[in-house]
Image 1: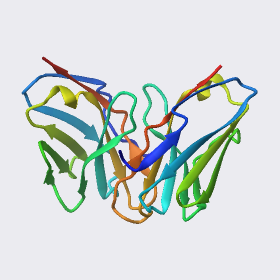
Image 2: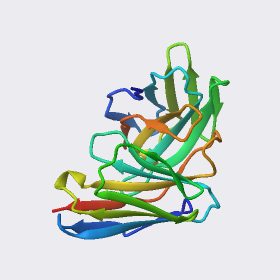
Image 3: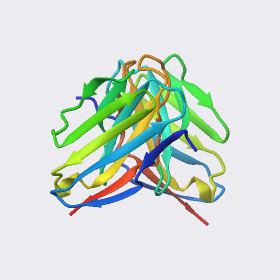
Image 4: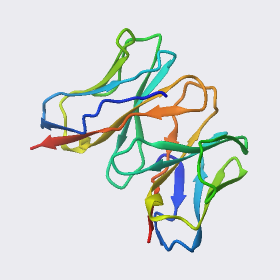
Length: 111
Length: 114
């Protein structure tokens, strides 16, 4: 079946540094990708998305890069802040109702 | 915050109990989802409803019974659960099934089965 995500459970970064969280996907038919942030005690929150006809999209302090050749997705967070500490999930969609989620990466921001 | 609310937020139940989880979305969306989130596992899709019709049942045991009386409300009825069913149950809504749009998640119900 399809699978999304690398088994990389924890990433620690210094406050103010940039963070890069990676995700791999296996379904080459996926055409829509999303990054979610999940803080403790809350549901996943949308951060940014990208469609397969793009290779980069920027938001406020976040950038998503899509490399369809190697089926790789990354989330870059600039000037990481303590409030960025959370679990980050990638998800892929092939155009239907189903989303396939990665296992998640826990980002810890060190003071 | 996201326009999707879930109640209760926490639930403890015995294996012989019957309980229901409730989800309500205030976004005018047509599709609603139930997910199960267990420790160290990716989000698992359970059910999908579109315009109150179930369109996906992802091999979920019959002790979980969904109900969608209208496009704004979604229930998950629970009966004779097992301890391994303890997890965070997340509801999500989406404008439609074919759009390239994200889902909006509720805060979840943390379920503990004793």
